[in-house]
Image (cartoon, rainbow, N blue to C red; front, side):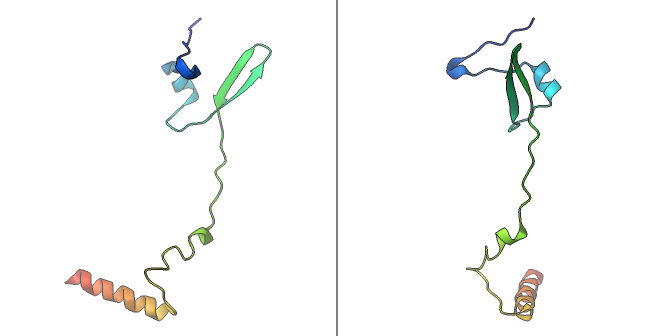
Length: 85
């Protein structure tokens, strides 16, 4: 049976066979459970929380603030004119 050595601070290096089998990539989370026969380790299935678009509301307010869509269009047109120069 293959063995894994425990390093300082109780760290281990997983053998490449385990990494390949669990499809582990950097920043992958593993979950474990302690059983009567030992410890079971598997890849964690994390559910990513969907971010709301409203999280970004007003994020750039310090640079440009427009009262109307017409003001925003005028600003963008000015930028485009500068690109063409």
